[in-house]
Image (cartoon, rainbow, N blue to C red):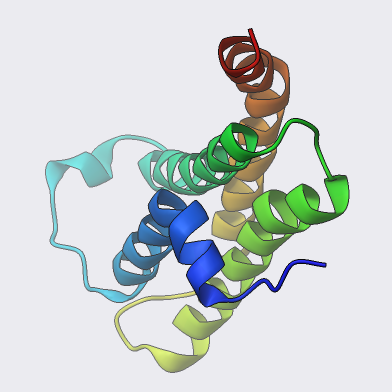
Length: 135
């Protein structure tokens, strides 16, 4: 069995780790007021895009390094972990900040992003990447 340490993840998933850092930063800084706030549901769209983007990066980085899907690893890494991270961030926003609030609808939007990215990755990115890599 491979010795999976932090160096392995940094080397194999650098864009995903960068996305995690960016999401954590964006989740706890105080955003400036903009006219964008007047667009209906913009907050939920942003949440779907952030977590959909993270899950997509995890899928793509995985697919470039593997010839088959190990659902235990990929399901945990690209589906369950982003959803859990999202829930933890919402709880921390509600309980540990004064400028942000936790919102279960944000959590639902985050999970929607993860699920949409999973469908897109499995049915679109997987065939394209594997066709390109394994010709």
